Amino acid sequence: MEDTLNNLATYGYIGLFLYSLGGGFVGLVAAGVLSFMGKMDLSLSIAIAFSANALGDILLFWLTRYQKTMMVEGLRKHRRKVALAHILMKKNGDWVIFIQKFIYGLKTVVPIAIALTKYDFKKFAILNIFAAAIWALAFGLSSYYFGAVLSKFAMFISDNKWLAPVILITIGGVTWLYMEKVTKKKKKR
Image (cartoon, rainbow, N blue to C red):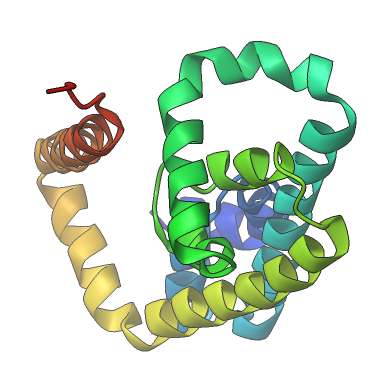
């Protein structure tokens, strides 16, 4: 276990950056716990996760807006999620940029859906940077301050290896059911 922690401390910042380009929730929580344990620096972890998360969404927006033909093929599988993102955008406006940072499964779809509209790129970039800062601070600080509890939970999972797949399947199933329910076509009466 000690070798794993040392490797994470050595290569953790690079992994955190790469992982945060596409989301980063788990990576940021892990970095917060490792910071609590003294293996990583909390402010550097938050800064890296913030910059990568903001950059990732800006790149998704830019690619979708200015390289549509490249992105269209990948969007076919996620039409319902894109439609849900459009509905959320109409219903909640700019708040969707903040909300999407905290909802697993929508983080990558919302910038794509917004880019398909006539939404201003500069406005998106500014709001996205602000939202990424709030996201990074919220999860980085909370995982640091709950580091003792989270590290005990990780040790418990490590001792009971059968529990990890059960938790992952449960979280995946609940997320899938939620997305199915929200994106399901309504029958016309």
